[in-house]
Length: 228
Ligand code: CDP
Image 1: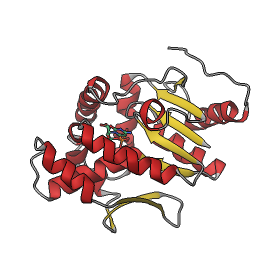
Image 2: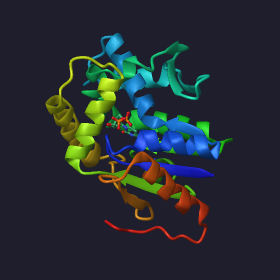
Image 3: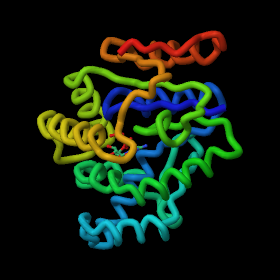
């Protein structure tokens, strides 16, 4: 079974997808971490982020792995090196959308995502999961929240991760910038799949969102709704 969870940054997607996967005993696939890992490696190799060819070449040779650690958290590895913390740094967040909009980069990532999901039940989280990666997913959710709330949530998350050099203002600016690039790009833009269930989490707790999703998953007769 594949459960697709899409939506913009700060809507609570990752937290919800992670808990959901734990509760269901499914594999959790954070596709954003893969685009972040590629971006980190590009910066470490001093690649010009406008050099599409070089980025695609790097994407082809890089081994990006997502693995669960002993605490059940997902860790991201590049060629065996744990980069879970590094990929959350603002220098990555600021430019990841420029790397993720490249068509051939996406093709490589999508192929790898499909491979990972081949033999497992999974919760897959991203921007284009229900529309492009797994259009045949068993359940599709689009998690959203109003802009202010998303900015505040992301700011708090980064503070908790001890990421330095951030303010609510620059977190909001980053979100605005990424929302724009992610939803207007030519290839696989962020949008709600027609048959995805829309959940506005602005006034919901994580627990409420998880429960709402579990009810939808467990009710096979439940039709997707288009509340947006
Ligand atoms: O965690 P956050 O919502 O900040 O973002 P993320 O899921 O880590 O994704 C980082 C970036 O990767 C997004 O802003 C997109 O540009 C890109 N991405 C994508 O294009 N397609 C996906 N399936 C997942 C992420």
